[in-house]
Length: 199
Image (cartoon, rainbow, N blue to C red; front, side):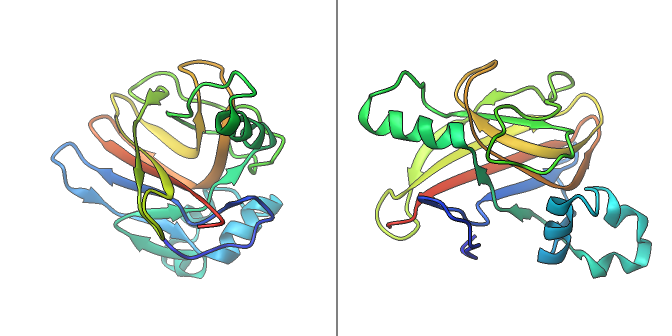
């Protein structure tokens, strides 16, 4: 998870969100890993997160099938303000430990304050994740959140974000990606990493 993308930000935005989908028996289910062309076309609104499903054997034009999916997040304006508050205590923001998922398809934008269509039922409700610090370049330079959603219903998951409350709250970051289709009994493990650009 070290391929840097060029976004103007104080925090280095990397391919830092990993998704691993498993069936009810614990077997890994392959996910579609979009390429840079597909990612750009989704951001432009030219292609939807479901476009690869319509290509059939030609889906290789937009990416590949993999045992995990990696995407880069987008820090929001509210998220930057929240991080500044967490650094010096000048604001009232709580820690950003909640991972939310949804079915929204509008490209992530720095002005976002919520997920577009957050899932609240069927095992996909926002969850307080396991938070820790891990080492990417220097000791403890990366904030990590991990949560595993266990589904009791089916969804086409196309967005995820990090927030600081069980409901409402401040949206730290968000991203939209090619659809992850889940059914009842599936588990989706999400690992989110945020690393300071200076380290």
